[in-house]
Structures are given as structure tokens and as C-alpha cells.
Image (tube, rainbow, N blue to C red; front, side, top):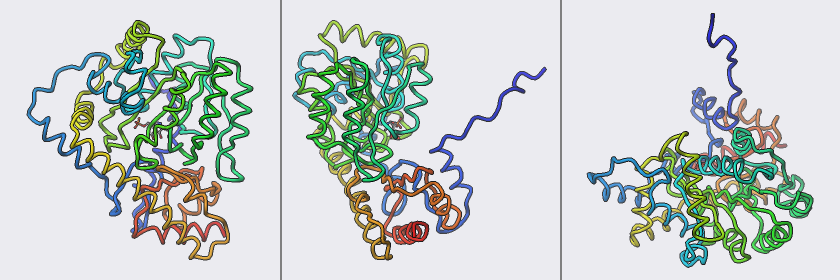
Length: 399
Ligand code: PLP
């Protein structure tokens, strides 16, 4: 008898599959604009200087012990301050439950499992489109899913009207997954005025917002500005949750360091919620990894390292913003008749190019340029030396 004869190969992950195909290509001009990981203008991964300095500070210290189930307390406190603001009333009131999580994915998954247990009447509303893994996460947590309109293909911008209609149509007290900034894959964010309206509508409908914040600092270069949606919701007195990742903004991808925080009514409730989140973590991975959390808390508690981090995260954001300009200019120079204004209007790591799946296939086949078939281009994969090649290729396939 075969134990595993019935096991079929799993479908390839749409994002990670792109890298596999890229690695298998030996063409010298090949480009990977599929995966959302930052690269320097030399196309190299970047370890931030503030991280190197934090590593030096913690090297040799006695840090191989287990963390508590909820992770490093100092890390959690610094993460919350970053998301909610140094002077946030909810923090002064000690009514936020926070646990360290396995990066942004783990934070979303902890929330989804928590939602299943403690918000059993609610479904989750997910924007169209979204980071593909959101669907997997809530599916595996057995939470019923619904969607809401977000992106308008015609304007390559926000479908604010559709979004508001869907918020209104959703049953009162629904959970909405919102991208705090640098929406993935579209690069399209609501304006502060839009957020204020969304927040007011959420109030009326009694909806709950979970903010997925995987790119704080990466969108505008300013961590405070990138947290404006969260601040607006807090000002309006919402109870929200926030899934934070330090993968992109500190370049700690493989360290799996993130935080899930949930705003509660009062400190007692926050203690109870935290204990339940820990109970979810315990049988899955027991407690989170230590090294990345120590790096983050070392950086955030040291004013010098923190200001170095601000400078470096702004440097990454600025390089991407600059590449948007250059890509657009090169497309216009190549003679493209289409409008490429959305490339510079969109924000964060990705450009939702509007290329059709067949055009993406041609980019890959004829030009060895790898990206997901929804036309999402990771701006971080573009450099001064390959931007013209990419622009000409896009022009060729979109003529
Ligand atoms: N949420 C969004 C919107 C993302 O784009 C990503 C990464 O691509 C994540 C969460 C999670 O990333 P990580 O688990 O590496 O922090």
C-alpha cells in the first residue's frame, strides 16, 4: 500500500512560482520584477546599516533563551508605538493586546484564527484585488470570505464609489481587511479624505477594521505619514487590529518578525485577548523567534539607530519613487501612446501596470522579464541599468 499515492502536486504559488522560473532562465538580460523584496540600484539585496549596528550591539549577549508565547515585550511595545503613534491614547490606557508574530503573514493568520474563535458571526471582507495569500490565510482559518471593490481598472486608481457601496452593503458588524498603505498589488491608496469617509461609514455600520501594514515607511518614506489611516481610525474611536511586518521596512524578510495588536475596551480585556492569542500560538509554534525581534527593539529604542533607520527606509522609498519617474519617462521616450501616469501616481513597492496576462507572457517569453500574470511589477527589481530595457519591452508588447 502506498501512503502517499493519492497526493497530487500542489498548485504553484503565483508569486513564488515566478522566482523559480526566473532562476531557471540563463539569459543575461533576464529581470525579476515578480517578488516583493527590495533591491539596490545594483540589483542586490540590502542589509540596512541600522540592522548591522544593532547586530553588533546584541552580538555575544546572552540571547538564546525562549521568548514568552507572546514574544518580546519591548519589541511589542515599540511596534505598537510605531503603528499607533508615540502619544496614542489607546496605549496610555493600556488597552491594546499585542503579540509578536511570524512576520506579517503570521500576524494575519493569528488574527484570522482569533476571528474564527471570537467573532464567529462575522465574515472577512477582502479587497479586489489583494495580496494572493490573504485568501489562503482566511480560508485555512475557516473564516467565510467576501470581497469588496477597491481598484478601478479603467482609471488604474481607487474605485472609491464601489468601495463605499460595498462597505454599505456588507452586513453590519463585518470585519474588513484594509491595507494600511502601499496596497499590494495595486499601489493605489485611499487619500486621507477617503480614509476619513471610510472611517465614518465604518462607524455607522459597526464594522471592524484589520489593518495589514506590511509597508510602513516604504510608501512615502515617512513612517508617520504611512500610518495615517490607522491614526484616522483611532481618532474616530474605532477598535481596530493591526498586522505589522518588519520584512520590508527593515529588510528583515527571513527573520520573520511582525506584530499583531488588537485594540480592546480596557486593560482587563486586553489581558484576556492577549492570553487567547497566545493560546492560538502555543500549539502552532509555541513561541516566536528571538533574533529579529531583538534587532527591531534595539533599533527602535536607540534614538541614534532609530534616526538612521528613518533615513534608510526613506532612502529605499525614494529610490523606488525615482524609478517610477524613470520608467514612465522611458516609456514616453520609447514612443508609447498609452498614458503611464499611473506608474507615478501609484505608491509603494508595486506598480499595477495594466498589462494583460498575454502581454505578460510575451514579456517573459521574448524578453526574459518575470512577473505575475496580473501585470504587477515590483518596482524594487528595477535599476538604472535595466529600466530602459524594461520600458522598451513593455512598449513592444503593449503597441
Ligand atoms: N501583507 C501584504 C499586503 C504583503 O504584501 C506581504 C508581503 O508581501 C505581507 C503581508 C507579509 O509579508 P511577511 O509575512 O513577509 O511579513
